[in-house]
Amino acid sequence: MMIVGLFIVIATVYFLIKQYDARFVLLASGIIMACIGGVPMSSLDSFAKNMTNGGLIQAVCSVMGFAMVMKITQCDKHLINFMAKALSRFRPFLIPGVVLATYAVNVALPSAAGTAAAAGAIFVPLMMSAGVHPAMAAAAVKCGTYGSMLNPGLAHNPFVAKIAGVSVMDVISFHYKANIASLLTAAVVITLTAYYLKEHKGYQSTRFEADESFKVNYLYALMPILPIAILIVCSTLFVDKVKMDVPQAMLIGAAISLFVTRTHPVNLSNAFFEGMGKAYGSIIGIIISAGVFVSGLTAMGLVSDFMDIMLNNPAIVKICAAVGPFVLGVIMGSGDAATFAFNEAITPHAQDFGLSQVQMGSMATLGGTLGRTMSPIAGATIIVAGIAGVNPMEIAKRNCLPMILAMVVGMFFLLN
Image (cartoon, rainbow, N blue to C red; front, side):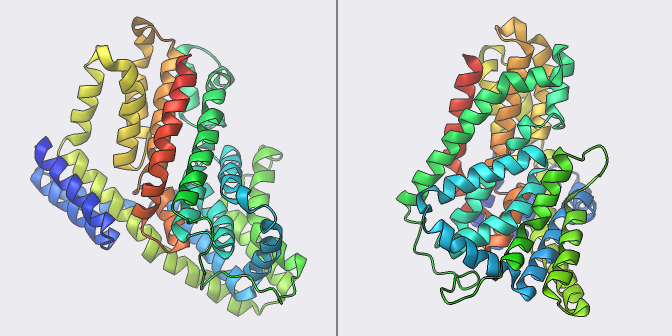
């Protein structure tokens, strides 16, 4: 069963690399594996369940609706032309700057998908207008979507804290150096990758381009970044008074844009809902298909077999604490399942392996998070791929080396 499952996974990756329709490939692979696993309905149940994945649908559809509003009001054009002049002076720092900026946003907004949607809507068009290849622009944003590890609200931090009997801030204070070191590594490596592939400049965008004769309205230029500013302010200064998530911020941004640009309300409303509809078909559709693929992996027992191998070999537990969650994060598009399973089963006994509970728990969390950041079927990857108009596999290929080296550096800091 494992051999057949691995063959199907390899075939899936092959077809994705060949740029076959990702929705069809993931759906077909998931359904086939579920049938082989003897539970064909699990794939169809997963399809139905993911159709109403509230958090992702709210974030993705509202952001793409807002992006469409920015397009018809031309606010995105004002921002792009304004930023193009500034970026021309600091081009060498464009890609690493986007990685660091996205990371900072994700610290405040611990949802990787929400951060990818909010930050990607701004940074991807800006980089494309500056000549960065679309896949590289999306990869740079995706590269920064693991800043949530420094947020006390990330579920893994209190989970490890409870196991170790310490405070959440004790856990964060232990792993923050490793986290930041891995971030700097990833930012440098993806920048070098862009230069090596010659994707840091020269791309001629047909959707996002600067016009030297364009007269910038600075108030219009502020509109695209307004929602993300609202989100950060509310999540850091008014967290106890104002509960603000991505959809609310996008609606507020669209409403303010209506008054600033004096666009006809009906035209703005139509644009917003048109963007939401396109987002569901093109972006949410792939996320639904990815869920079916994961259900197939589970039905064939590949996930449980991998976990058994990882958990039943004490001699390699230190390697498994990092690599195990990382690999599962790549395959499943989420590091949560492997990380929680490892921390629940093994981390309480960390001292038997010469590690502290906080140390081992942090290793598993960082490994799973970086694996998810590299995964082609992670929600955040699919979102930025949709914004850039590229295959999610193209983003995963560009983030492969940065995430692997980030894991190596991060684990070095955690083990020393």
